[in-house]
Amino acid sequence: MVWAFLPVILQASQGSQRGSTFFALLPFILIFLIIWFLMIRPQSKKQKELQKMIASLKKGDKVVTVGGIYGTIVGIKEKDNTLILKVDDNVKLEIARSSIARKLG
Image (cartoon, rainbow, N blue to C red):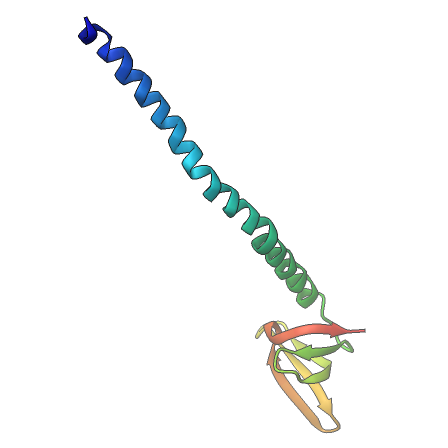
């Protein structure tokens, strides 16, 4: 008589395993979402703002490079994707556009 109910018992136990697997993975899913909202999303937002700023650079803009060099843009080479940066009197540097850290003023 117990053997007649065995398939029903097995099926019920398999269904509860699926639910318990979901609840076991739930903390990992929540941790991933928290990390995404606190770290990944703001970083990608900051990266988009930096790309927008780099694309809008023009002659006369005062900038700082990632190496800490302050200067004024006096030329733009679109073909090479570089900028001519005036650092001081008679001192000009050709730098990659991607090496600009921020725009001053």
